[in-house]
Amino acid sequence: MLTEGTKAPKIKGVDFKDKTTVLYFYPKDDTPGCTANACDFRDNYASLTKKGFTIIGVSPQDEKSHNKFKAKYDLPFELIPDTDKTIAQAYEVWGKKKFMGKEYEGILRTTFVINAKGVIEKVIEKVDTKNSTKQLLETIAK
Image (cartoon, rainbow, N blue to C red):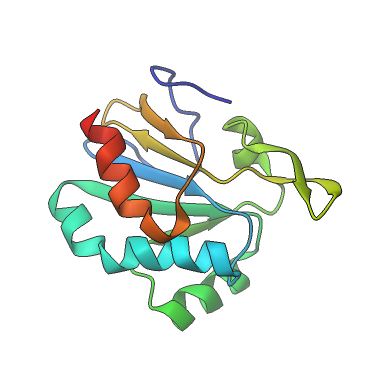
């Protein structure tokens, strides 16, 4: 996984310049943990943008799925489809997971804080989906 101090891989259509970006990777639209994660960022969106953050979510679903998810939960930030997993692989968050005894490949839920120079400042690997904003702000304060 990419570490703090590393240059963030480029994402087509995303400019990290002149702002701090919270780039969060999540497994799937409209699942309990992913919904909690997104809604926590939504509920704290105004205070996060006042602090200068831009929020962007990335998952393997397509644009249609993302649009439905955004509309259902009134999400005010961008969700990027990564159907071919190139972004997840560039950020090294595509890997082996276990669920109910089964092993499979998928998104490793991770949040990156990327500064205005495009450098990763913080990496949150054990995301608290219900308290994403609080966890983010506490991590940045360290």
